[in-house]
Image 1: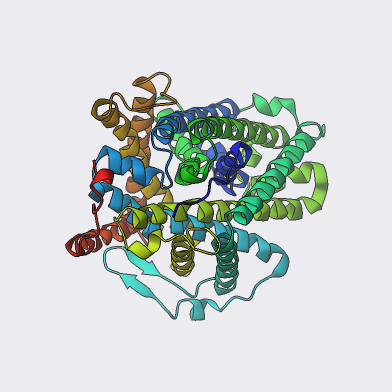
Image 2 (image 1 turned 135 degrees about the horizontal axis):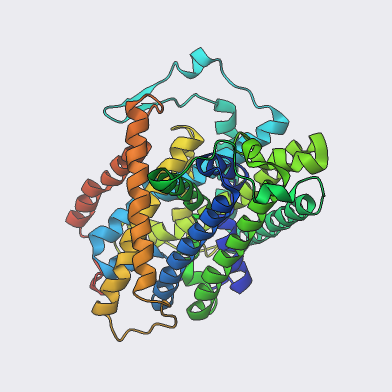
Length: 480
């Protein structure tokens, strides 16, 4: 039994935009402003990171056109490499990437609901009374910020039920949330840029502490670009639901490229609005730059407006990650590379019900494993490891399947995928180095990226156990 093709072009575009635009855009620009000290460099970094993300989107558009099947990266890695590589990715999506992303974004949604509702919290002593120690990795505090974690659980649980019952309902939530999010951001940008309360001089005035040159300039650019990549992450989710997209040979490419271009445009306009409202010296020290910039126009009510905006953004992003990422587990179960029950279509609702429940349940477990930063760093790091492997796979498939039907071919091949691969290697290296350095110097209680690697490697004995039972690679047609 196959999943129905119920996602049209515009719904697909909202999945891309909704996956990319989360909460980071309301906070990250301040850190990036401090790292760069120049408004022109800040805008340049957002543009460069957007172009690199677009290059990645072009690579995935070719692969999505070749294999318009539910599962996305899992399918591409299987076709490019083998069942083991595909399984490790699929397991990583269950253990780290997708579930940590869902947990992290739901955590943000709950935190900003806390802005209005003030959830209960235990004393510091009580929060640290339960500690889970992982040798050589660090400590986890499950009771920390317990009120926010309980609300995060309710958000994930509710969306899990919605996506279990109906693909159309989950997609409708995503469509409405994305439209409201983009509309709110447009109003925010227009309100600031046309308020007259800012200064055009801010566009050309560097920070008083600006002193970047030579290697320090390169280092600052690299650090800021890493932050921008985190904000652009998520566009790949559309490939995971390829098997449910109408006319996938056309709509995957259109939604990927069109959605990323929309995100680049929105991010550039938002940053221009921030710079117009706040001098870079002020912007670089702002803990919530969107609220401070809006306060210039709307006064003290700006904090509440931004909180509502972030709640809408993070709720929609939680839903789209749950909606799309359960399809990877479904694909694994369908082709024999995981437990068969994961690939069952729910008979009554025609949804990948079991995989939705699995992703939702483990996401809730990860909510209690740590803070937003821990969860976000884990899923971003492991995501980019597999982005790089998938991009390398396009060269393998060009040689392996030279005559395969490719409705779309990457423009600028091989330059475009090569640039994306180089940036991916840099990104992963920087995160790994920074995580280890922060742990060694006591700035972090856990090495986030290494924890992600550890959870991924747990899948190795599971793979061999399933292989011994005859599950992995059981269908020869899927293991090329």
